[in-house]
Image 1 (tube, helix red, strand yellow):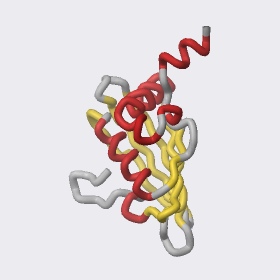
Image 2 (cartoon, rainbow, N blue to C red):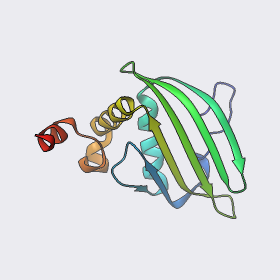
Image 3 (tube, helix red, strand yellow):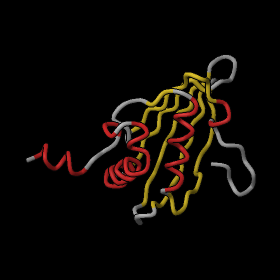
Amino acid sequence: MTGSNGEKHPFLDDLADDAELRGTVLRRPVSGRDNIKRLVEAVGTLYASQQLTFYGAIDQRRFLQYQATLRTGLDLEAVGVIERDETGLVQRVTMTFAPLDAAVSLSAELGGIVGEEFGDDLFYDASVNEIAAS
C-alpha cells in the first residue's frame, strides 16, 4: 500500500517471521511473513482504487482505515489493527471489511486467485455455501 507520494506500507516491511494475519475475509488466520505478503499483494490486485482515510498509533498499535472500490464495482471500507512487539516487529494484523457483500466478494475473488496456494477452505466459496444453506 505504498502511496503515490512514496509513503512506506504500514506493516509489510516490518513483519516478524511468525506474524499472523486475521480478517473478516478469511476463515482462519494466515501465519508467516511470506504468506501474509502474498495475500496482501493478491488483495491489491482486486482493488480498482484505494484511499487511505486514517492512520494513527497508540503505544505499540497502529490503526489503519481506508476506502476502496473493488474491480467488481463494489465499494469497501477496511479497518486494520497492526500490533508490534517491543522491538517494532509486526506480530499480528487484524483486518475488518464492510459492507458484507463487498467482504464476501473480496473473499471469493481471493479464493480464485490464491485458493490453491493457501487452501480452498480459507476463503468464501459461494457454491459450497449455497449447498450448505439448502
